[in-house]
Length: 465
Image (cartoon, rainbow, N blue to C red):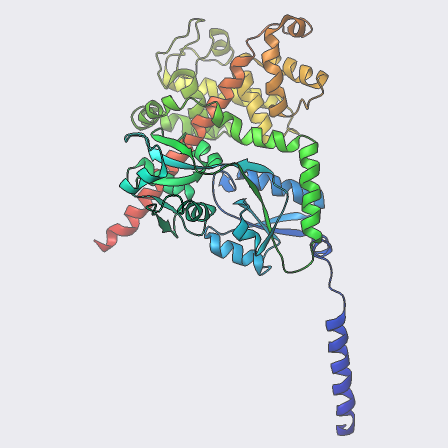
């Protein structure tokens, strides 16, 4: 047996050598064979988070579309420390990062960036209770705090040559949303935020203001490792180019940002006051009817706020009444005897929303079906269906809210509404109606989550006192 050992050892060396010399699969082929695309992101309103109905966020929707394009499933991992995130990409622990990353000269030294899918500007954010700073030199009178290892730090370092007195601190634990909250609560004086994050977060903090841009428009892109082949990188660029050309990217950006752009920020302070002092009177009713009708109670509350500001005695010029603003005919159909009684109104409104939702095809995307339902609550099911028909005639997708909401205002124009079954409608109103509810819902969800986090901290700390 011993005389064969040298031969066995030699064969083993040959096999190892041949295996080492064997060509490696391209990254794209490896992903297709495995059937999984592994993407790294961060938890933020502009990227990815788990909502009541599952994962949401622009980055999530975009990478999910890419995974579908590749014909594979999507695996999402999160990392909030930017330095760690970029290191994990460089070391090929994930396929790429999709985290609202700004393309910068420093980052391009170690990473490969895809085609851009969005542009942002960096903005100096302050609390409106203080005078607006006119230039960066005035930030030296307060505390400027930014995310560590961020593109904001790179930009400030670049600007320091023009503003030698400029100074800042880098927070390794807080994300952009948390720093914006600190400014809103006057715990720090200034921060730097990307324009898209400021746009979404400002709805939660009516006292936040943007002083000025500190950068020109900058591209956001996906980050890939430079170590290895570029097959996945090239396919991602191909996908993004096609997604832009098809108009899908523009629709995606609209869906995530347009409702926030059109929101009336002046009403946030009043709304939050009503959340604290009015909502508790009715929250149990919203929760109960939400469970009965399989609806998110916070959504029901947002609808009711849009309708009546949670005022059970509210009356419109057209005669609709109560917290859910039911018409007399609708209330009668639903078996509601007194629309001004909060319990009856919320019961009837919740049931009506469920019934409207059931009229729309279950094959619709869940979010689109919801927006159609809310629009129908405002303007009527028939008018929404008319708008969907108009959308199809105009070459749009009648199953997508982002297309149908462009057609709803046409119901005011004779050459359009005269060809519809239900005729004239003030079609611009349901568009604004849905956008307001989306923002009211987001703010309520954020506020309650914030209270829960604070309660958890108190519960955790109390035993040690």
